[in-house]
Structure formats: structure tokens, C-alpha cells
Amino acid sequence: MLTTPRLRLRPLTEADTDWWVRLHADDEVNRFVGAYTREQAAARLHDIQRQWAERGHGLCAVELIRTGEAIGRCGLNWWEQFGETEIGWTFARRHWGNGYAAEAARTVLAWGFGTLGLTRITAMIHHGNEASTAVARRLGFAPLREDVVLGRPCTVHALDRDDFAAP
Image 1 (cartoon, rainbow, N blue to C red):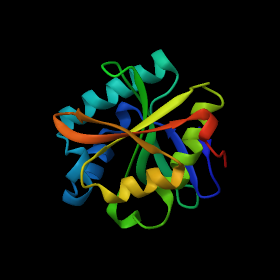
Image 2: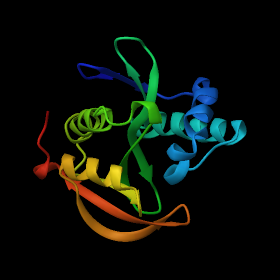
Image 3: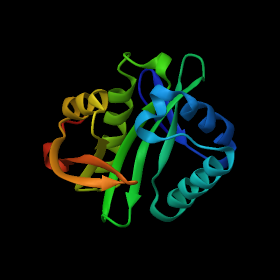
Image 4: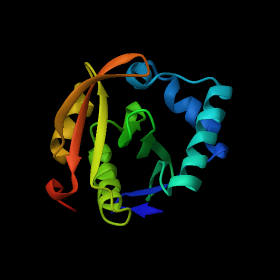
């Protein structure tokens, strides 16, 4: 479990299926990351649990320490086809604009570069997702290449351990 002054990040499990579906049901939230049926969410969360077991990292639910409310997700995802570890973040719309994405991501990056010893972490951001691009820039990411992820064009940003300013 990772924490910041305002947030607690815990590994996602299949028990989070209904919450995952609700998070991604908002058209503004799923515009770049897609929506999920309950079956799709359970399968994705099963894969996330497997990644935690096999790689020692994965996606986390992000909760407000003050209330325990799950407000989004953030964490690391291994992409076999790219040979890369990516950081990702998605938050419920009513929690946008509070700095939670950058706060959670900065903590995940410190863990990835420190504890896990990763040397590079990418952020795959679909075209038009200006909010995530701004978060990536704030964290020190720079564009690396153009690619296609899940059938959609994206810009892959990268941050190397030596360029990361730890919190």
C-alpha cells in the first residue's frame, strides 16, 4: 500500500468489479480509456491481480484517506508487446482538478524507480487527452514516439529514473 498526505493506493482485486464498472461508466471518464461491462471488468481485474502476483506491481485503487472513498485508479501496467512498464491514471470526474492524478502518479513513480528499480516508465496518452498530457508534463515526462494502443493512436511519453524528481 502506498500513501500520500491525502491518498491511499491499494492493489485492485476482483472485489472491485462493480466499482470499476461505475468509474468507467461516465462518458467523460471513458472517453479515452473505454467503458466496461461487469464481465469485462472482472476479466481486467483478474489480469491486474495476476500482474501483481507475477511482476510485483499493477494498478491500484486510489482512496481518500479522510473518507476511504475510492476516487480513481493509478498504478503500473506491463505491456508485453512493447516491453514497457506504463503508468496510468483515471479518476472519477467529480474529483478532477484537485491534483489527485499528479499526487498519486508521483508516489507510484517514486515506488517504481526506487523499490522496483525500474529505469524507464512510459505513459501512453490517447490523442486529445490534454488533461493527462498536462499531468505527464508536470511529472517530467517527454514525448517518446507515436503508437497505437488498444486500436487508437496515442503519444507514448517516457520518464527515465535519472530525470525523475522524487517527492
